[in-house]
Image (cartoon, rainbow, N blue to C red; front, side, top):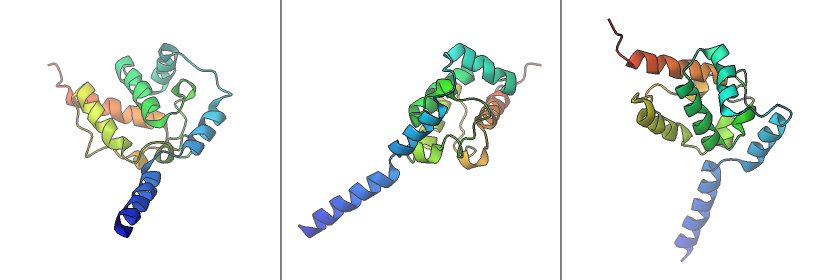
Length: 143
């Protein structure tokens, strides 16, 4: 009986440790409220100026990162820092990078699982430039 109770308490604590911090997520969204919310096309154009990335990749990142983080991505900009500003490790589920890599391979046919580490990037633009490079390297050059 006590073993079951202890297991339950342990699983509740673990779930809390692995879950997104909803309070921090709310704080991040609150800090972004002063920015204009952009529809996906203008958002992609703003990121293209900085990253030179394809609209397909940008739309994928916009939708996927919003889904993983709960952050209102229409207000996120290229210079936003993934960890310091957007608090990605805290606002996402602990395994969001695994889900992202699975979604990325399904969308682009490129396996990032050995390459993608959120701590290696400073800004969201850095992430997108990295992703664009991975996609472009995976496509055989036409010669």
